[in-house]
Image (cartoon, rainbow, N blue to C red; front, side, top):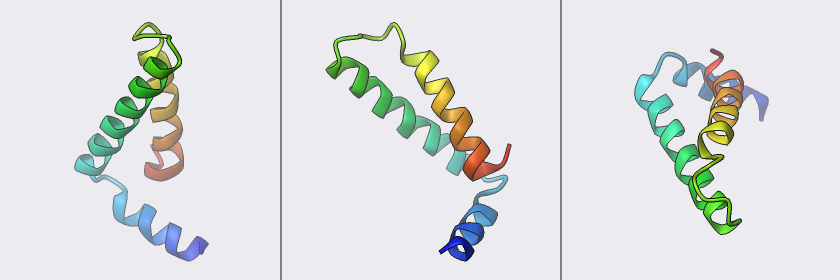
Length: 62
């Protein structure tokens, strides 16, 4: 399985469209989750930034 993940990561490196898509998906999911939790938009950016950083580190190796 790690071989497949490595191939996927290699294919995604430097792919700005994939990064923007991933960021948008994270932001949407965080917005939905914080709304359901009753937090509103106050914490969206901070949470999204943390998750986006982890995504970029793990998938896009930035």
